[in-house]
Length: 330
Ligand code: GDP
Image (cartoon, rainbow, N blue to C red):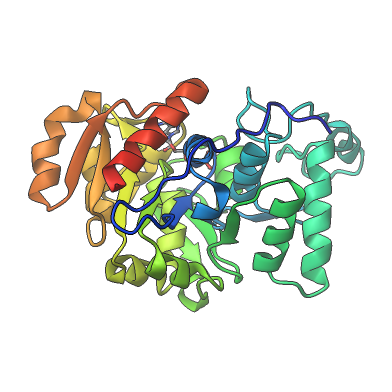
């Protein structure tokens, strides 16, 4: 399998100003928005600096296979395998299996590519043999040439569900099958109350110098991570500086249903709404130039703001935003 692009190599090593020791950064990550910022960070800091905690609230069983869309998007992007145009799945993908599944009356609304299937077959077999999602994710990341520590938020099942006018839907049913064209009345993270943070997650947050909350959907990507008991508390307790990038720019999501979902959960659809969702533990919010007028109200809530271009266009945009975040944390 060929890569979609060269894997960026870290040109320099950020060190703590006082001690000269390498920084430890934890990133909380959803899918596409997060993957772009992580690729920007990867161009600036060595992989072992960064521990990535990935959302598994939108994991799903498809044809009996365990699919972890956000973990895969992160690993495919950092490994250089992602389909750059779609922003998900593998580069050079084909969908012949999907076509054959029609014959058997299997659901084909979830676009599993032939190459992508290998990841899910492998993950599912290792999980069936009794390995934890943490162990399996580490192996898959390594095999995809990702040298960062990639952790799922939990080894237990946490499933984001949305309630529409006709009842509850799993997140992928809402997002992929219904293409988000369902009015959302309520969001729930099924299983979260009895889930535990995956091994290493709380420890990584506690010992980090900085935590970066990627520009991801606050309700369906960061929300499930925060719903795992102990993770929000770790963010409140850590000495690390916690920085987030607002995924809401000019009163709407850069892409996807984040705006509608935030409104459904009672948050203002703005950088201020993002700030209030993260307020108990957030130190710094990167806000887009378009949203400069919101900064006094965000700062009034005790959150420092940095106004910058936050929409990542191309590799340069990713690196520029990552650099801005690192500068703010220095
Ligand atoms: P998903 O699984 O694709 O929904 O992935 P995420 O949880 O990462 O959600 C994408 C979120 O990131 C959306 O809310 C977008 O508004 C936001 N986003 C995507 N690209 C960018 C970007 O370049 N800049 C910013 N600020 N937000 C972005």
